[in-house]
Image (cartoon, rainbow, N blue to C red; front, top):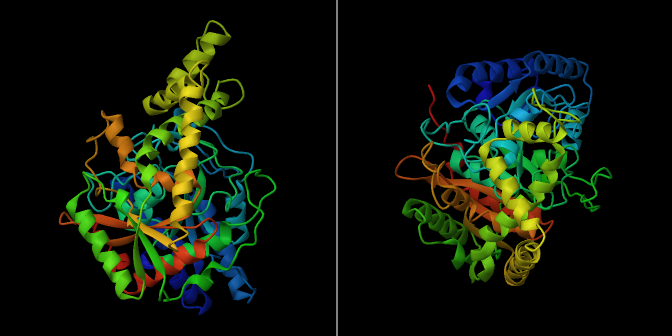
Length: 487
């Protein structure tokens, strides 16, 4: 039995039954990483010794009959912008290449409390700025379905690792679609919770009003388990919302009778690949056949979402990335003449081209004379986008649409055309601007054998309905069981 191919909940059952040990699971996944990661390049850091030590500790508890959390003994990997004490956290950037955090992010601590097995840190677009994981300072991650194609971004390493069975579960971050878009392109499940549902303490910031941590998993059940582990109020994060957290596993029921699903006309855009639209339309028909009521809704300001996002996100990035100056921590340029020269050379050499592009865009938008014309106006449009969702949710329970307008594109295809790259997130950005929960689940393959993602967006803090809809669809199809062949 190839343990690395199983889900977390399947492995949990076998662990509890005494059929396998956590060490056996961990060795299986580590061997899988050794076998496939040279092809997909998902990992920046693998902590093999730590993983095996943590697995041995769990096995001792199991032998002693100690009560253990659901995720105990399950190998998990983290996107490399989530701080991990004693383990490098690079953001896939030269400027943080040697940074080892002295503390754990809240989500990392919560997973440690679950007694997970830490496998390592996953590649990403530098500082989460990108849609293809081509912007990493270290390597280009490849899509397990086609090694000549991108896995999506910026959580591309996480999505590729899960799709290739090189991790059982993973955590990523989603600023404009960075969990859902790679999940769609790699044929796995990826969820962005409501903004404020999960602590951002210890998440290296890109755009603070948009970033949210969430799980990437093999199926919806594992997604609910991971959400149970990481959600909850955190006094260390001022944007963390103090609301009760439900048991998300209670949402794993097949029941969408009379559920009202909204289909936004604006999400079936010009330029969408016909295979993607066909698969999504088939999924909508499947949901309708399972008892859901389909309602057409309008989100008229969606067309301004990309322009709005690429003012707000770079502006916040400009402020957040000002701290990387070579003085306090991280990379520092050598052979400099004075302080200003040191700042200039450190940031020029430490940041990649996309990060520098966004810093410049953001600094310009915030500069004197342009603040009102760009940043302030963008915030007003953001309010209009949120109001569109509010009005739509008066009619429906969830909104269903494609996650990405295309399947995975070829490596290098859009590198020299930033605007086309930015449009990759055109269908995911609105949920970030409105702070809404959204999930991407597999809904079939294109004629080129590339995965298509179905996006389900819910009301604020209503992850339960999103999960129930996703679970019902998943259990009545077999798309989530399809895996790429790497051998």
